[in-house]
Length: 254
Image 1 (cartoon, helix red, strand yellow):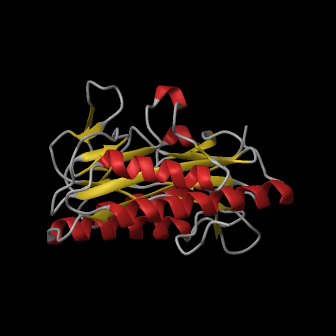
Image 2: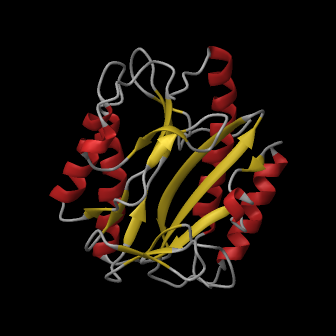
């Protein structure tokens, strides 16, 4: 069941979203040669808790960290640890914060020092595919219009969208209905976007093929062909006009 949020609930989600967006910005600012992924995780966890929230991912279905940090050919759900970032890496950070009963969720891919032109292009294609989908995040539009716009842009740029993982509704639970895939498929039906819906839209885009493999740790997902992958996500609110980014990259945590 799709849960529409009240004005009060939306205000609470704005607070959670601001903390989440600021935590993503912090993680991105820490991406540099010589930094370990564990250091980033530790600082983000400290930041989220300093704002009266809890990391949404810590312990979620057994996930052992506060941030998913995925490097180069890792698509999503990378577990922070001793890995030292190197010049030329691209680093995806996926962050969630839970405050006053509601979650925020967002992600982004950041360059570690100087990166290749291919990597720069992939990051930009992934980010822009989100904004192509956002054009259809309007009351009364159909969900497949949003999903299809992401797919068309990414594939039109010569990239592939991951099909096994998708965006989602979000609110009191991290994952609510509807599912928000980054492509169009018959099973999704044609649900209409309604005012008060809150959804996490998150293109996961590969430079090569769409195939993925899950590592023995049970979490880390990599591209099957070893090519680079990037990730961009925001929590958005469907309104009676322009959609609102609840994890606005320009927002500051209160």
